[in-house]
Length: 264
Image (cartoon, rainbow, N blue to C red; front, side, top):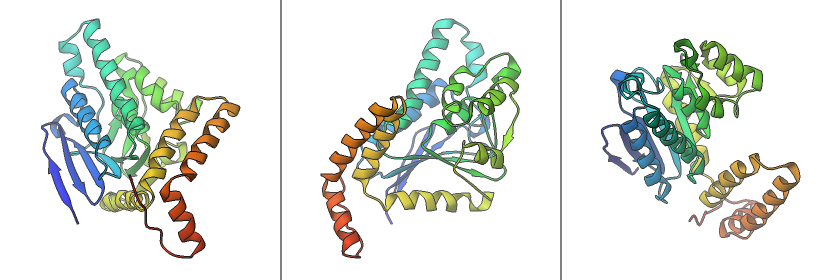
């Protein structure tokens, strides 16, 4: 077992056996996404993206909640349009980075995930929630439509389910989030870490080359028409077939033995 830690005031990083856990660390503020928190998470994502030893990333929250969204006190203290544009642009770039780093990102969700916190769950590649977790895009309750969270939410849920959350601000529970496609798995709170670990280990066991190529292909084809998507996917599969890992994996399958991945 190989464990390393990287301390940051706002995002704690701990690495173990190919899994990097990034923990949002403003527990007294329910991990609200201040500018400093967003910048710290962006920096952590940039660092893991360049680290070939990291195979899976887990995003978690310290304290009683996953993430309560943007820091409303900071926003009210800096009430000018230029600040708001910078804040939402910075946050949007960080959210997109979750999809662009080569490693799959798993949200480990407990407590509440509201507004931009719900957005964060939606933008992670995968999500595992404690059975007591609750989700909402609650900006509408304070006169603010959750426009940026709507981007991620509308790409996870059906249109009517997403709009109901956005227009009402009402909470949904973990089981409803599972049924509607916002999370992949739900576990009892005391089994949450084990469930996240099981999912992460299943990915770590696969070829990092195939995982990285596959994640990039998946997001690229989403915005394409059907014909273009198949052309792009066909080229991606042809390139993947030329890798050492594909050759090793297929030979191992034919020979009924465990594959030994070459990796990056």
